[in-house]
Image 1 (cartoon, rainbow, N blue to C red):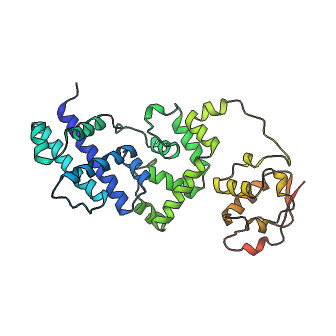
Image 2: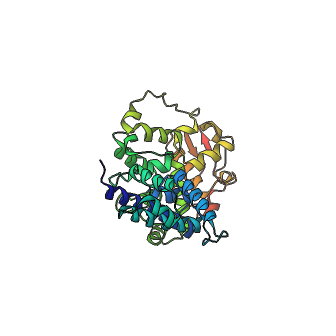
Image 3: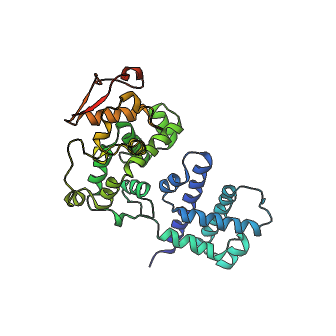
Length: 317
């Protein structure tokens, strides 16, 4: 039997986390999904709380009806906290309903959700699983070798993206807010958001999602098709980032042979293709034995000297 004091303390903590989630969203510290993951609040529960607060505001005379849903939700969160605290101190449920105007069903909902919440010992890797895979994932759903899997997949990212994700999720230390990460890298919060989004997009590619679900050991033990070599090698086997892969696919690049005779500078004309995408393509193609370039592409920084690639074409041997 769960101690009633512990149960109500958990309930007050759950309401507090909902309120903190809303504050983070309003202040622009995080997007809605990221804030929910950060405070371990299911988005469906957040929407339910918005609904509860609106219904309570309609019945309340003191609450202005013109306030935003977030302001009303914060007002209702304070009422629920006081209600649960009074309940813990021995007040009857009928007195609490009449005093604070909080419905009995809402109190029961908060208490039940609090008792099903994630435990404090959940590994930080679990937050990455929730961000990449979505849904209400618990630690029981993680593969046995989830730590090795996450370490391997993060190692495939660029150093900057890996560091941002590690800081945001708290893999090496406590979780960092957007402001803290922005100060660390001396950039704006919007840049941090973009880097984090790009990193998550890269991890959501099909092979990496399967590896997250199964674990690296089980994934590597699965039977796979033999890697194709030569000019018929599909671009899927180059492990391009999501943006690079999607842009190349839309532009008609399906196999290695499609790059034959293409100007490196012309790759920049592909819609939404950035300089770093071209650098990624060059770096990957240079590793293939059947690819050569009509000019020197070593140590070229496209962000500083794009014109250096004029006249350089890709040749498939």
